[in-house]
Amino acid sequence: MAYHGRHSGDVISSPPPVSSNPSENRKRILTGLRPSGPSHVGHYAGAFTQWLDLQNDFESFFLLADYQVSDYAENLPWIRWGLWEVTLDWLGVGLDPDRSFFVIESGVPEFAELTLHLSWFLGLGHLQRNPTLKAELADLENKADTVPVAFFNYPVMQVSNILLPLAHLVPVGDDQLPHIEMTRDVAMRFNRRFGETFVVPEGRVGKVPRLVGIDGKGKMGTSAGNAIFLKDTEETLRTKIRGMFTDPKRLRATDPGTVEGNPVFMYHDAFNPNTAEVDDLKTRYRAGTVGDVEVKDRLFDAMNTLLTPIRERRAYWAERPSDIRDVLRHGTTEMKRRAEPVMARVRTALSLDYLHDGPPPPPEGAP
View (tube, rainbow, N blue to C red):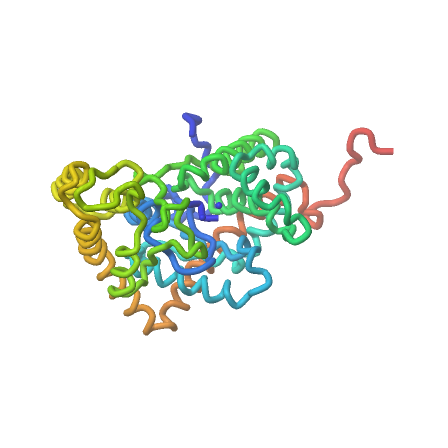
């Protein structure tokens, strides 16, 4: 999923507050990841840095979207492991469970219920026009017999993930903007037909473009073998950077090299805060007066400086599994507490509260 892994100027329409607790009247964000394995530096640059800033100003719900890891249905222990790994990564980068909520998607069954209700109002053609889903379907064209039905549900599930907590803002990667537009459309149509029920959310894209993998062959992926993970040791980091793809036309250090599209320099731009050093390396690389080894060693120094405190915090939490369970239990319980009254309003809006009233009048056209 990843509201980062899978806008417009409309006025946000807020339904009546679910709670009178003033802290719940702050604007909210909902974002998260599919827990398919440990997080990599692409997640950090494209998502986590934005999340860290937003958690200071918004009531933040970070979702572990385990319902949406249907591609691991034949290996369910992997999902359990992946959920733990992602949680450690979030704590390692500094997401604060005292200010934010870490939510296990399957621990809030209202997500599944809302998904089912909203699927009544979303046609298959609507989903197929979503360019992100269309591209994913094209990749699966020859695998139709093995693709689980859950794969086709996940876009609606993402809509439910955003609408149920009444999120105002959704930080996403640029490839996820079609999902935000679909969510906004569903919220506005539901509100027009059934009365003000959902917040119409806005999307926000991070400033760092999507990183290619260290092999230079497409985006970095948890299972693609081309990722630098946040938990990688210093030696593993050094080995991966030393093996990174650079300019294939540059055979010697004295050859002028290309900086644009060069993964090593893309990573320098994303992770090396010493812009003067980066500019100097680029100038010398173009002139053929610096070798790949020096460029990569400078990148290692910058990235190791960034990842060292993340590794340390991650190791601290890894030794405290009961505390991690408390963090997950607290966030999931709070999300469920918020979800229950919202779902009650949805059921009332859809006239599904069958036991609350007497016999209904016959609808128009009834025999």
